[in-house]
Image 1 (cartoon, helix red, strand yellow):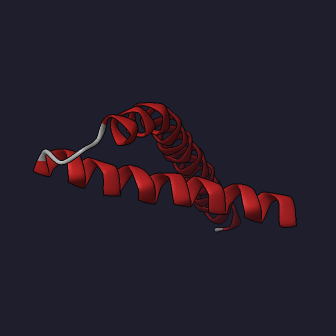
Image 2 (tube, rainbow, N blue to C red; image 1 turned 180 degrees about the vertical axis):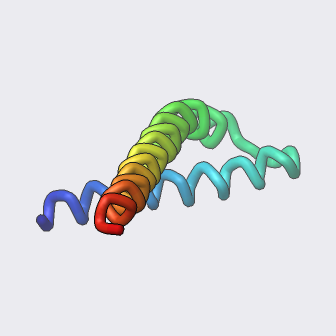
Length: 78
C-alpha cells in the first residue's frame, strides 16, 4: 500500500512540475535544463492522464452496465 502511495505522490509531483514548467515556458523564461526536464516529464504525465481517463471510462461503463442490469431485473420482478 505504501508503495502505491509513493508512486501516486511521484505522479502528482511530476504533473505539478509539468504545470509549473509549462507556465514558465508560456512566459518565455525556461532555461535549457528546465526545457529538457519538461521534455522528459511531459510524455510520462500525458501517459498517466490517458490511463486515468481510460480507467474512469471503464469504471463508468461498469457502473452503467450494473444500472442497466438492475432495470432489467426490476422489470422481471413486476
